[in-house]
Image 1 (cartoon, rainbow over the protein chains, first blue to last red):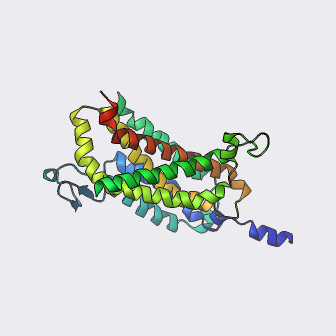
Image 2 (image 1 turned 120 degrees about the vertical axis):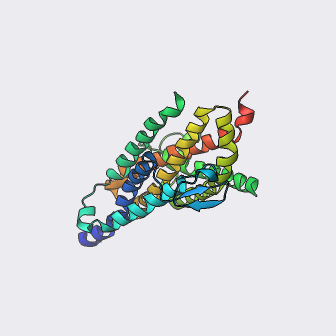
Image 3 (image 1 turned 180 degrees about the vertical axis):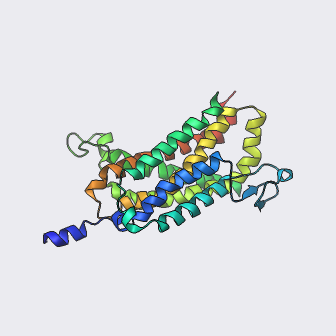
Length: 116
Length: 155
């Protein structure tokens, strides 16, 4: 195998798709922001078995989690595809785990409120 | 129907815990193949890349199952926990739902990093992503089982 074919075959999948890494990095940040701001594009009310775009207190307890996950997916995907490839390729692989770890630590610190 | 879904959700979680634990231990630095073949050494000496697809599929299906179970939990279990003033139990579940979401967001990158050919410069990122996913899976597994059995576990 020549050096040139060797270097071609060693191009990893993540190098070919740098926007995927951006998606994963942003996903946790967008999710955490939505949760912290108590904002969801929609809410599900299990008592009424209905989705609403606004708050309906008379419909019982609401589930915002579906909305947070949807918002995180849509916003992260939109930004990930909008970032120019040249810029995305500069992102080192370490960011793929450092940012999610910091996000998880942030969540654990915030949720300490349940244990005091 | 909800009981069947809960049991399937739990069984898939068992498979997921097994797969991610194999993979997480196999990427611990150190030789897994040299020396006497102890149980731990055998447990670690697997091909970690072979688990990636199964972990992505199991995590996704288990998370979807959890999402389908969530309305029943919100109406019956959470309300009961609030009535009993069990704030810590509600807290660990809150963390569980957040971790499940973070894990879902990580899956595309995790899968990409484990796709062949494995890039040597991504070995650390691959390892830490796997450990983070393992932490998420174990937390959610334990919390799910404790909450499911909480009436029998606590006086």
